[in-house]
Image (cartoon, rainbow, N blue to C red; front, side):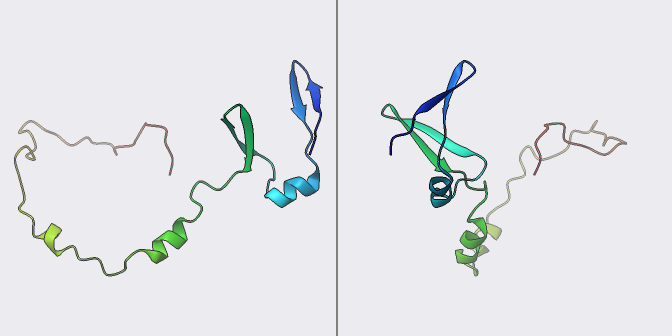
Length: 98
């Protein structure tokens, strides 16, 4: 299919026919990739798409016995004698959200 580029300010854009977008599952935004001097447009997927199905397929009866019976190494796990817990709640300031 041939599509002409249109001028948009100092850039150029293209109009994609609605049936073409619907056939590809493209709504408001796309994933754009450049490969071998080609632009590849694809529908965006949700960041965690498929996780629920993957968890259902995961083994339900995992055996943690070996891990639970592993020897505990206490070296370096002691609190310093002068350690004092803060009086206020500890809150992450990393800016990430879950």
